[in-house]
Image (cartoon, rainbow, N blue to C red):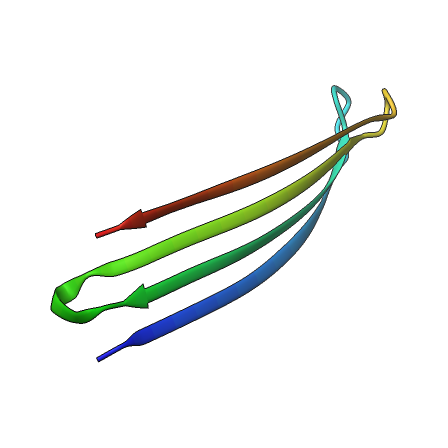
Length: 69
């Protein structure tokens, strides 16, 4: 039996603060597939964009990870 799950998501945050305010966009994709004998493959990718409005500083972060159980 093969079971596959693919999940997408996104969120937006406006952090209005006195010290270090920022705007953030976050996106993610999760993938999971079950193989025979209880083996499961999991993979995750996320991408974050941060804009620090006071400094006009922009940071992008890409994370990729996975596991086999």
